[in-house]
Image (cartoon, rainbow, N blue to C red; front, side):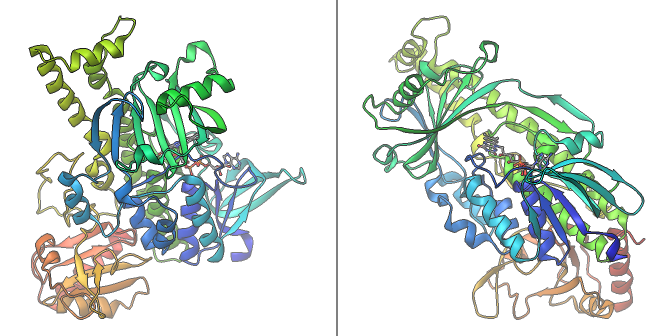
Length: 582
Ligand code: FDA
């Protein structure tokens, strides 16, 4: 029956969603074919913040080091300025993306990976190249037109833009990774909430050497409080480094009611020079574009054999840097499930868990990214006097006044900056996902999870089913550090137990399942000399965790099991339930 299908998975879109899905599927040896209407990949910088969870995905897929080569290193990402211009008076600085003393340790503790800054035109080729090398087929200049699904598969019609011909391909499954204007999401009638284009932003990509302004306070993002770029809810202009420190984006909000922004050469040049604060600055303007602030998410992500992911199902502004990160994680969640069903390891019902697990994340990040824009309000209130002609000058004079009012405003400024941690140090938003679906068996004895700290700001490691396995440094056979994330994942389920977990080890070995490995923490290859796993495991040493290929915990047995028969029954029941065989 293989012959009935041209491929097993068709993917429309070669962006972060499609390319990650193709890479993950090809890594698992699944026949996959991705197509894009354009001639190549992203041709503008777009997303760049790559958070630890996305880097963990890259690490699992074996491309972390390659991505790091192209990245602005973490240490140089985050001394974000709030200033009147790059050369001008600073109002405040915020240590962002976990680089500050207060948060650095939290980030180190949570993951074997650092944050990276990799612009999309550099990231996408890494994903695509590796996917291709591992067997994925790639076709450009080809537009998706329509599809029909039946009981066994999907027939998809494309138009080849080079020959002008239409043709069809048949596949078992279709992934709609076709971006914010997804035709596929529309064709399968996904229900959306929210609105698109609620505000407009102008982006100008330019070359100019700004290193002297940032060498002593490196950051990929700076906010400029200046009348030339003061429109909209953020109320500030933006200077974002694309390549340190000679390629940048200047961004500012524009009034959509007035139509497109004025992009004439002298207006744009003047704006850039004002934002930098250097009237003589040599600037080479490269591209000018607009984008619109969306606030929209799909209630669910799939219908039958068709699965949408990425911007196709969650559309939001770049604030909080969640765009491509969430796309890559959607793809990673979906890919192993498709691979398992195609290989016959799991029943088709496993695929329903994709939407159940990822749609709540989509909803959350759309709300978070939009709220992050609105949270500039209190900041603006501290340095602007509304209604005045020179509202920023007047505001700054008031802010710096040696008066009780000045003291109060400076207090308010600190509080407003604290609020920006929800955009720039929202470690919990990035890593605290909890999945609920049939691919997760809740630990009924554990009760509701209690959040010890603010779940948006702080990571809470736990081995509760539905959470990602906590990172802990172990030691491998060579004596080097290896993460709990390194001894799990890579396409397989992992039964994690301790030295006392002999019954589990035997039960797993008896199953002889090609998709299951056992890791005994404490044994050679996965020793715990730091006691790091001991601290976070929450289960008895003779208990067990079943970790899915995507690093999320499917099931746990917290109390000890010593006898083989119990271990056998429990493990088999857990696997059958999670894989949809129960
Ligand atoms: P993406 O839109 O990247 O890819 C869609 C793919 O589908 C493309 O390959 C396209 O060719 C293909 N396609 C669409 N319709 C098709 C059809 N009918 N037939 C065939 N192929 C079709 N995010 C962020 O986090 N920080 C940021 O700073 C920015 N900045 C930014 C600037 C600009 C100008 C844009 C356009 C976007 C951003 N983003 C962003 C958003 C970020 O780029 C976005 O989240 C991801 O690219 C979405 O990835 P996807 O893979 O889901 O879709």
